[in-house]
Structure formats: C-alpha cells, structure tokens
Amino acid sequence: MQQVFSPSNLPFVKMHGLGNDFVIFDSRGIDARVTPKLAKAIGDRNRGVGFDQLAEIKDGEGTDISLDFWNSDGSRAGACGNATRCVAWLMMQESGNNSVTIRTERGVLHAVRAGDEVSVNMGHPQRDWHEVPLSHAVNTNHLPLAGDPVAVGMGNPHVVFFVDDIVGVDVAAQGVAVEHDPLFPQRTNVEFAQVRGHDEIRMRVWERGAGITLACGSGACATAVAAAERGLTGRTVRMEVDGGWMTLDWRDDGVWMTGPVQFVFRGEFDASFLEQI
Ligand SMILES: N[C@@H](CCC[C@H](N)C(=O)O)C(=O)O
Image (cartoon, rainbow, N blue to C red; front, side):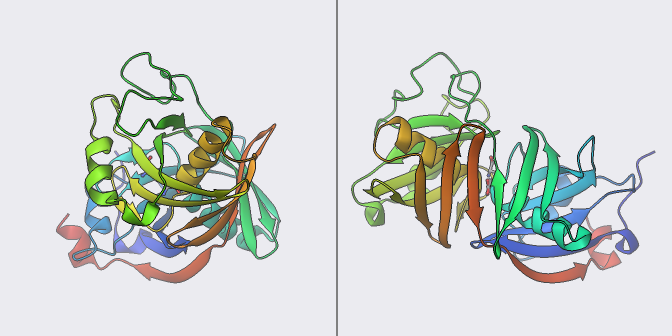
C-alpha cells in the first residue's frame, strides 16, 4: 500500500536556476510518491507554493540518486536541466563531493561543481523524428511549420525557432499554439532564439506544461544544438535567457550546460493543505 504523504514526511526545498524555479522533495527511503494531483496542487502559485517544475529525489540505481520531474500542470517531464543542476548542488553540499551521478528517464547524468556554478552533461541530442518525438517522419532540421524551426529531443521534446527580433516575439501566443500542434504527440517545449554571433545566443522559452519560464536548461541545450546544426554558431555558446546567462558546450560525450543555482528556503506543508488535495 503506497504511503500517503503527510506533513511529517513532506519537507521540501525551494531553489531556482536562473529564475527557473523548483520545489524539491526527497523521497529517498520512503514509499510515498508524488502524484499528478499533488504536483498540480503544490505548483499552484496562488493556493500552493508554486513552481515551474517539481523534482522528486529517489534512491539511486547504480547512481548516487534518481530524479523524477513534474511540470506545474501535473504532467511528467523526462528531463529538467536546471532542476538537475539544483539537486546536484544539494547532493554535493550533503556529501562534500564535487560530482554526482543521477539516474533520470533519459539515462545517467553526471553533474560537477564549476566554481560557484554547476555543470551537468545532459547527454546526446535526439535528432530522429521518432526520438523527439514527432507524429510522423519529417526532416527535423526543417519542420513543416511556419518559421522553419528545428526539432531536438533532450529527453523531452523541443522545437527551436530562429528569429531576427526576439523582443518582438509573442512568446505566449506562439508558444501555446506550437506546444499543442498535432506534429508533437507529447506536446513540446518551444524556444525562440536570436543569434548574436558565432558564440552567443539570446533565447526565450515557452515550456510544455509550465508556460513562459525565465530559463529552460534542456531548452538551452536544444537551442545550442539547433544553432550548431544550422551552422549559425560553433558548438560552445554563451546563452542569455530572461533569467540570466548560461554556457552550453556540445562535446563528444554530450551537451554540457553550466550556470548558477540559488537555494531559496526549506519548508513543510501544513496538514490542512495536504488534506484538501
Ligand atoms: N525547465 C526544464 C524543462 C522542464 C520540462 C519541460 N517543461 C518539459 O515538459 O519537457 C529544464 O530546465 O530543462
């Protein structure tokens, strides 16, 4: 019988990476598990705590830990780069080590300290249509959509539009329309990118299941891959998102993403809140 969360076993941590904010649970050693209903209630910015994503730490499987991710609409996500960096920081603070291995839906990720920032190898990009995934076979470098975007899977689906004037993009209106386009059977994250030079990109994002966020780590990785594939940049870029700056480095062993993390507070839920869910 699965244990139901109760205030005594539901402490949480609030963190953000470049303003992409997270509630982090540590479910290691207990049977209780997050549910879509619980995630959606906690993610409500008026009635709950509010987050872009919830990260649930579970026992490792040949790794230090495992991680599951939930969006604020209660949907699951196969990857969450900024939350991975935040949790990696927590684990490194706990262990005193400078690296951590993390099992996620997309496989084993490695994170390391990078000065006062955290780097994570988000793995290799998925470029075949069925890996992204898309609903049918198309050229993922030139999707049959207005704006000629690129599709890249990073454990979750992304579609990247290159634009000349990123300030003028209506991210919400265009983002929600593309998120729900039938070409994406699992919906998609939507990035808009303006290339500033061979090693610099400005990116804004509409996230599947969360809407506009100040940063998206897997989206930044997808954008860096798309730009390099199109020959618009090299494989190492500095990227400015609404929440600040990060570095992307597409190496032979995967796409490394580096940026800051910020601990905000530790909290615990009141029983009256949990009882209403
Ligand atoms: N902000 C995350 C991406 C979170 C998941 C995304 N909304 C999805 O549903 O795939 C990141 O930093 O990667």
